[in-house]
Each structure stands twice: as C-alpha cells, then as structure tokens.
Length: 119
Image: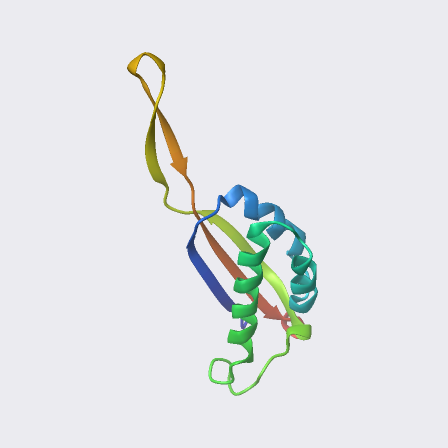
C-alpha cells in the first residue's frame, strides 16, 4: 500500500492543542481537509495545513511513486498523528524560596496520505 507521508518535528505548540484539529480532518480527502483548516482560527491549523500540503506535494512528485502523479482530490488522510516532542524546562520562583517547573511543550506532527483506490 503506497502511503505518502510528511512530518513536522519539534513544532512549538502543545500536542493537545493540535490533536483537536487532527481529529477534525482524519479520514477526509486532502483537498477537503485543507479547505476545512483554512477557516479554523487556531495557530495549530496553519501548522497542520502546511504538513498536509507537503504530503500532497510528495504524492504529486512522479519520482516517488512509479512515475504517477496523484491529485489532492484522490488522496485520503489515513494516518494523522500528533505525538509529544521534547520539552523546554524552566524554573519559576514561588513563595518561601521554592520553585515551580514550567514545561514549554512541543510536538511532532505526522500526516499519511493514501490513494482512494487502495483503501
């Protein structure tokens, strides 16, 4: 089964914020998913949109798929994963000389597209 993937590793956004958008577009056609994300106000929608566009570009490259160029209308988002990435850990002073840990979270965004005739 030919699957075209794209990744964004170390995106500076929490995985929890992007997962809501990933659940929205999972199972859609690639062009429908791009249209749906275009009107979402969240910052994670822009990141997910770029990863989907990159995966569509990988599918349209004839060198990667036996000389056949795929269109976005015939590709389905089958694998949309948002995994937690590395965290920047910072200390914030608290009362009575103690400290509090601040975790600046990041995420890995992975998108996999499959042609509709292979599903």
